[in-house]
Image 1 (cartoon, rainbow, N blue to C red):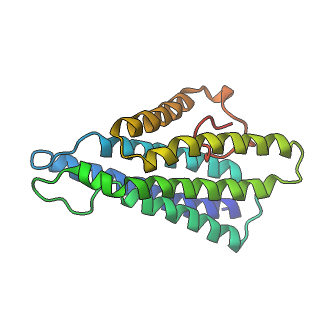
Image 2 (cartoon, one colour):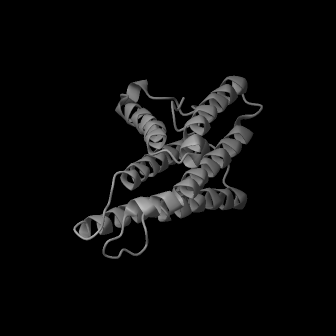
Length: 205
């Protein structure tokens, strides 16, 4: 096992737990669907965070696979992955009781969840940018980072702060659509390894 494979297996495990937390919360909600109101707000948030983690996972592969392994890189990866895990843990309630409305849980936690994803993505961009400074075509790549990050923040931060269900749905729905479009791009047309990281969630590359 190479140093990168060792690092990424640990990093991927923590990100994988984030997806598992969301899946478990969703399964629990479905199990109690006759006694609670699920609504669509929590489901849209769960879909976005899940796709964001998947995109982020892909970006991490591109960002770290050529980086020299150090303990510092392991710690940085752990911090970023833990931020995502906390965000994922807040998408669904940890306990469900009869008559519960998940929209209330959504309103209480949506802001924190989305802002944590922003923090994770900004950390990833900072780490990725630090690695490519001084390399050929660094300016072009940094411009890509800035463009993608700006679009990500422009969609996610207002969605985190708004109290409007319609605005949240429009902003996060657009972001989900972007993710799904990216997912449908054939492999031979996908972004090269040097493409900007997910912070960018949006057009990655």
